[in-house]
Image (cartoon, helix red, strand yellow):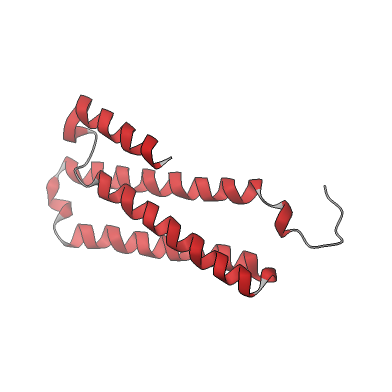
Length: 125
């Protein structure tokens, strides 16, 4: 998935330049890939410690992702990103597009794997 996104960024940048792709877009993509790995590892450890605690671990990781992402955007804006003009909009667009793609991928992966987290003895729907 990451290679497909990096390829799309490269093609968009080659065609439209900085008007469509912020120079930090590659770093944003790397940030979300690293954050997804850390959150996956944390959730797996929490579920391994207590299998009944999957929902708390999953939603806790989503809150962690949201707060870290808001922090990154605020740091960018505080350090002068708001003075870039249209560059600010391309950064925010790239950042939130990445945020929603990675969050959507995680929700999809949880929905496709719900059966292992069902309680034993409950009838399947």
